[in-house]
Length: 377
Image (cartoon, rainbow, N blue to C red):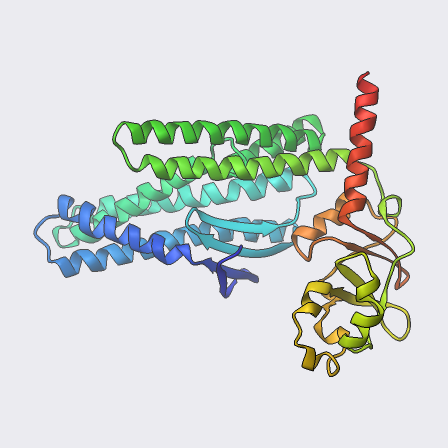
């Protein structure tokens, strides 16, 4: 996610934090320390309230991390590739590949809400227990606040709206019931758009009734609508490309360049003559070694272009999307979410035999649309 920085690892997966997280922590700390605690446990010093607010906000952030960690851990256990976990203002995002079975999809989706509900139950039990001891009233309130926050988080995430976990549960159940993954994705994404619109409407009604917190609900609804719309487009793409193999979609022959050329020579002999924004590179043995992005070459100072080899500033093959000719195109496109974007390099026995570009995919989509209309007539 743009605006995030890597801060470590969790269950073997890179952990990132968005710039909005410190802001979220401050808002929670302020609300707990300046509003909730002084009302419920009056008579304490401002320092006690401030410290308790910060601790409560930190614990809530930790519980959000545990929610996402549960997703990542179950995904890895189900042999699903996980790219990273990112914390941000609306909780967190775990970027991963698509599950291969409905059971795996269900397990990954339900793990997060169950973790939040478990944390909520433990925190509420501990908070109510401590409330019986007078010296522990402030910690008790913090734990009860934390417990209810996690319960609300768990219940809210179970709403049947993609990209919320409840929407993923609906996807998995529909997939299991119908056996049609693409149809399940499409139905769930439509439901997400409807639910997002309802959340936006409820948020604005709350604002008009004098509750500023409705803006937050409207913002969440807008986020749900946008992501659900994106998922619907992806589901449509998956349906249109169903059964098509990479060899049927790729362009060949491919315009390539030698990776040992200097940047200046590559620009003069290859870049200025190509009609593409990226050019595959070949090594001395004629095997693919990476991809040269023309915008990256253009950013290199003229004085350095005679010194640098194009392979030194290109995207290495390990970071490019690579597919075999007989691989399903839908499976090849799935790699794009975990690696670089289009184009896809098509490699057979170590040699480049073709390339799949955005134009190739668009051409297949147009063909599908035309055939669909013809069939409807």
